[in-house]
Length: 410
Image 1 (cartoon, rainbow, N blue to C red):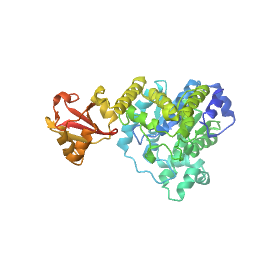
Image 2 (tube, rainbow, N blue to C red):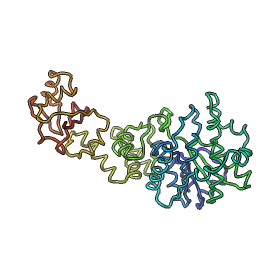
Image 3 (cartoon, rainbow, N blue to C red):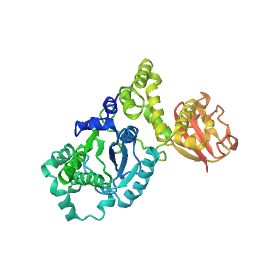
Image 4 (tube, rainbow, N blue to C red):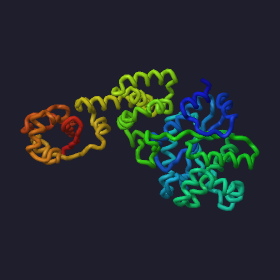
């Protein structure tokens, strides 16, 4: 397949501004950019397919630029679901640094990263109206889908003006770097085309844009931070194990689509994976393949191996094979408690609300349903001393097959 045909096959192009773009994308050599929002300190999994397009275009011979919106982050773009909270300026500046580091890690030093605050910080309001607002018709703006939807519930002038700011970004990037292609999610289509309109009117030049379908779950909900169902690509915010478990629970019906969008696997490889997956769906072959491709691209092979190790040890109960850092990654949200050393197991269970009573504690113990740091405990009078602890401090109790508790010496 030619490059453009592959993008279509992967379901990565929704709208395009010109039929010429197909040939230009196949040819290579375009300078392109995508915008990143610094209102959060990391990208999230819902954005991953869109930003992976940077790498796809790079491999096809195009030249990448990433604009981190230090200016646009101060304003906020319309979502069609209500006004965004006003972002703190200091937080945006700090997030710019973190996003820049993340982009460099993902895509290498040959990606140029710019901040639109550089050209907006000294522009006054009158100049902006004269140089930008004069050339974009209000009717044109309110007919854009995202704005039209938000008009029904109310939209501030600041968010209404967002597409003018993004349009001016394209103009400046074209002037400064010769960038002639912009892309983004389909919810950005109005903003993408505004830049093209501005460049045509002010420079009489032809530039291009395309949009990508939003990544959604099977109910059609965005995998995005605004919707509360996404995980971050920064491993200090979301560990590789958490990302692995998240992907492992993706619905089967979405897997072919996700493999196309989230990976570089080719058509034959994806068809083979899906055939094997459909034969034994309980093995989660497609999900495990997707998790491997995504985690290795974002964090590296060792992080994927770490996620597998944590998963296997937690499933088998062999907690003693893990370091305390690995345990904390795997048991991030489980209850924590402090305990006194040289205390009986039954007292630890009751005193820390792991069981509701000594009677219930005895039932769990005698049935072999309590393990402490990977060791099954049957004796209610078993003394928990330092010999059983992990790193001389930690006690990991598993009740039944899935319920974990982390204890630390007082």
